[in-house]
Amino acid sequence: MARVNKFGRILLSTGAIGVAGITYSAAIERRHWTLRRATMPVLAEDASPLRVLHISDLHMTPNQQSKQRWVAELADLDPDLVVNTGDNLAHPQAVPAALRAMGPLLDRPGVFIFGSNDYYGPKPKNPARYLLPSTKTKRVHGEPLPWRDLRAALTERGWLDATHKHHDLEAGGIKIHVAGLDDPHLHLDRYEMIEGKPPADAQLNLGVTHSPEPRVLDCFAEDGYDLVMAGHTHGGQLRVPGYGALTTNCELDRHRARGASRWGERMGLHVSAGLGTSPYAPVRFACPPEATLLTLLPKSPNPAATSDDSEKRAPYEAGEGIR
Image 1 (cartoon, one colour):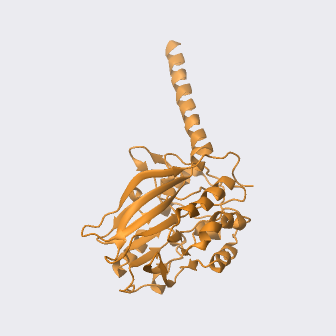
Image 2 (image 1 turned 135 degrees about the horizontal axis):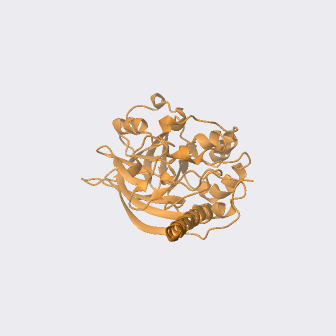
Image 3 (image 1 turned 180 degrees about the vertical axis):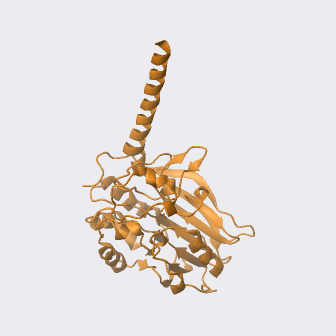
């Protein structure tokens, strides 16, 4: 009987820890908005530093007011360029909320592409499927979302839709060439529409994609792009301290699930951990929602991506979710 009681106490303790962890992940960490900073030497040698704000994976629903306020306040960082790598929506009525969040940032130069959750709404799924390799899961689409309305509003304010397009712009005194893809996660990417060497006189050749699939990254690297920016992974969404992301939900290796790294010999890669989750899987663990302020510098003889630990955090707000 003593053994049974001891075993029962262990089970109860383990269960209590599990419940506490789930409660923290669902109620607190997923609203623990965080600003990360990173430095990447990817510019031409004659370029001045460029401040780029990377936002991704808002997965916005209409009543997520603290997220809207926090994203809007990122305009105070005064970035030279804003890059949005998709999955802005998670509800058919979320376009006004997404625009409230991005509104002050729309006064700055910006580029964007869309992800799968701009096109289709979320659906309830078995959370265990998220841990399976992406090739082992069958895709189930939700209801169509009003991505065209979002695109019209963003382009009306001056942001550039880089979906299968080339653009040349100037931001922060830097000549930038940008090219982007439709979402590789849905196999909508058509690299042949943008393939070819970028212009030699650009001080930054930038590729944008939602899902950082290696086949896409290889194409950008082969053509000579300096930097590719992506989202989609949620940083793993569930991370184990000392181990990292459990999955990337794509073919990218889990060690690159978030942050700055190098792809190949000369191209930089930045993957945003994003600012949201599916309303049906509202959990993050050891992976708070985030945006990143990148400081891009001229290339060095031995290029590498570096980052610091400074973060801007905001209190969470209860009562958010789908409605």
